[in-house]
Length: 179
Image (tube, rainbow, N blue to C red; front, side):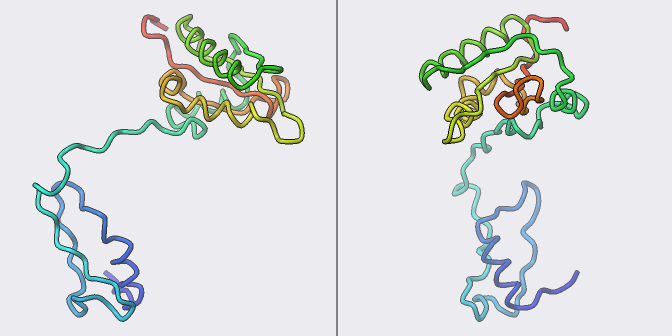
């Protein structure tokens, strides 16, 4: 294994000082030549904390970001991005206030999932000079806990469905469906 120059080693130790090793793995050996730190003033790697001091709860598993299409297989993600999945329902938010649009979106997503729909279209519009209040708010609302578990992925719509002023939503299969 290659040795880092002392300034790089100090930067590495400073960057990794709060990192704990994976369970069942030992902390790697540190450079013993500079136990108190290097010329840049960084401290040496602290010894591993005792099990009593470490939190016993595992970190909460976060859902993947919707816009990364991480919750679906590659073929499904490509079909969604290319507009090749049949749109089973659509919601047009034009002319609504933020409060009205938020309520309508929540009802539409939960109702569509309950009805067994998989691919739906949400039309936000492009907005005027500000770039579109609803266009920026809808993805944020879809990441909120009450809607996030109802949506697998989102993708910008193709031009024939509204382009950048609309979004495809891929919903998970409804719990009672066999499809």
